[in-house]
Length: 128
Image 1 (cartoon, rainbow, N blue to C red):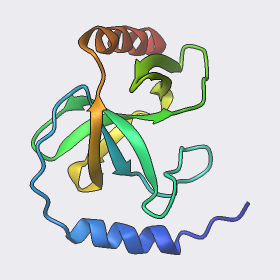
Image 2: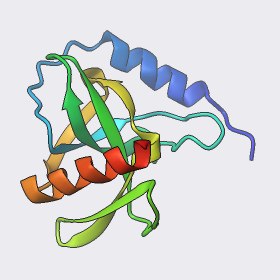
Image 3: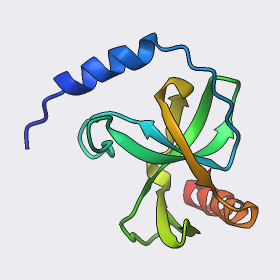
Image 4: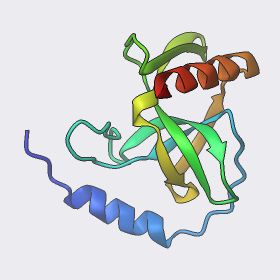
């Protein structure tokens, strides 16, 4: 399938121009405009190219490492399943990347402390 990046480019230009005052913390889950990506990188969905993202590591008031989520129930070392909002979600550990808060659309919740500790352990195991 051929991708048309024009719509994403227009939205990305608009997001770049915004100066949002947003406070965010590790463990939170936000809908973010992640865009239309290349190859096997996970795309966002709908008009705003949205995907839920776990804030894994906050670097400063603007940037963080985020892990995209999917509703698909993948297994294996590259995926982490956890309960969120009454259903099972899957964090795609291999898709973790650096984000700017300009991509935030809205906060949708947070992962529990115990699940977050399990996530960190699985991420460490995947990196070895």
